[in-house]
Image (cartoon, rainbow, N blue to C red; front, side):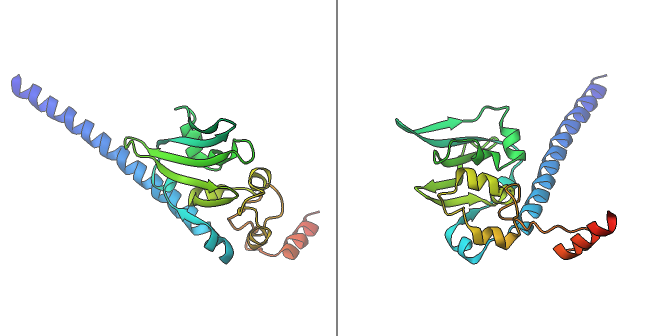
Length: 197
């Protein structure tokens, strides 16, 4: 009877450890997939490459918390996000810098779950964005820049042309060319639309 209980206890411990390992493996696979998709698509003009320092932090983690440093009339204030808001910000990284009044957001920091260390993923000094995470750059739209960062170095018409941005919904640092069954050209797309109508 005692041997059976010991074996049962050992099996339960083994199952628990294997479930932890499986969850870690899932998180690693998801982080690697996110990293591959964001890194491969990013396009910056040579001027933007010289002006912006990029980091790659968010694509390496699947959980964590955010805090923002915001300029107010009384000085700088640190705003911690609510725990329910962190998954939304990880899924849509642009939202981490898009929810504030124009000119108030100065810094965004991210703390990977269980570390207690704050890593800077967005930093602005005056009218210059100095540092930004590559995952945020890949999800940033022209509308967010035009609405909130139009007086900074992120606002760059050459960059918009470089990626083929045509509206405020276009991505500002990712190629926006429409590809339909191998068609890349606007003229080819117009011909296709004429054939369909």
